[in-house]
Image (cartoon, rainbow, N blue to C red; front, side, top):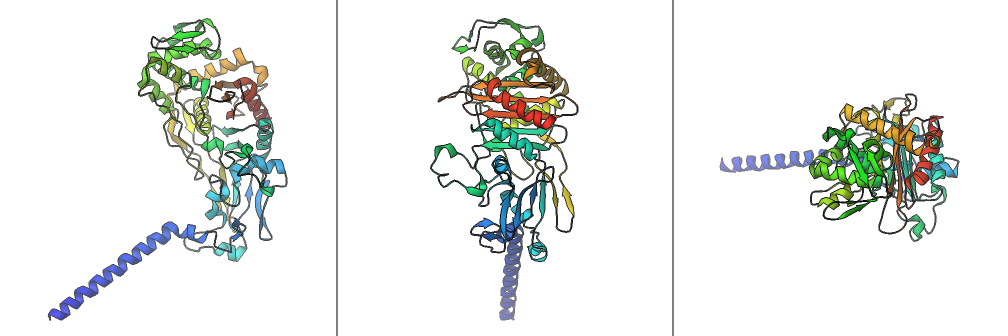
Length: 456
């Protein structure tokens, strides 16, 4: 009897171990099956380490950006388009980790948990992906950068569709440079600077400081600020880019007065300024429909004295901004405080012509009170209308802010952030030109060329 009981316990233990192991196997398969199926060792999908069997990728007009022809992956016929869209489409080897060909490789190959890779066997292809990207706009942005490093992003702030996403340096994936890993001009070439870049924001951060002032200083529009070319904080001096004399709040933003905005930042204090920065996406984890989690924009003034807080309020100090976050923040302001989350995959189409369409959604990470956003929108419109000049952005009813971000080495980084307030052209834009110099001359010129292409 005792032997029978022992055997029963042993059998139960063996069965329990079996079912636990089986459950672990199923869980592991569910979690990792797609990665196993699309591993580079799979010769059905890869040739010489490069993906070859996959669905096509199209831009918003149906132009082919990448497709498989006779077992080989081919890109668009235009070398300029190939360079301009490289960081969105991605390379064949997965070095550009934010590219569609890498992040959506399971979708492109048609893998699913139930049927595996049967689509490749049955139809000879996976799923096609249609993007929101306009390759013509990307081509204009690439040409406008004119060989300079930087980033250009544009999206529809009503729908969330990303129209343009260009990063430089880039290269032609059809003929990858042999010296790409040693030539300095290709430094950071695998980085999508729109999604993964971090830059000192310079005066574009004054938009955040202005928002905080509108929200927290009741009489901010009645205030006057005296600028003598510098502002003495009591424990250090903030230098202005000019001597502006006596200016009001709107004029201070128009003329990008460091003295006024340093004073405003110090009056607000670290806590209130940090809250507003967080409302507009700093220190927040953002997403791009499965493609990437952009680098977090960073704002930390927890240990600042007055002069450091003054510099932080004008976009210097240790503050770092991500172009994607700044673009989305502009969309939030343009859309009366509601940020629609940007996305780049419009829909996925299976060989059976079934569509999986991306649904736009409101960002949970970026928002502003509507009255604050609308007042800020009016100030950004004033910047263009009364200071930069509408002639710099003809026909666009542009709202925006430039930035000339001082860095340790070389010329300043040039920024432009803004949006068109025309109801028929609801597009927000961010441009960064590395070492480009002044914001309006470099980044502002790029922004106008791209917006004219998109809004025409």
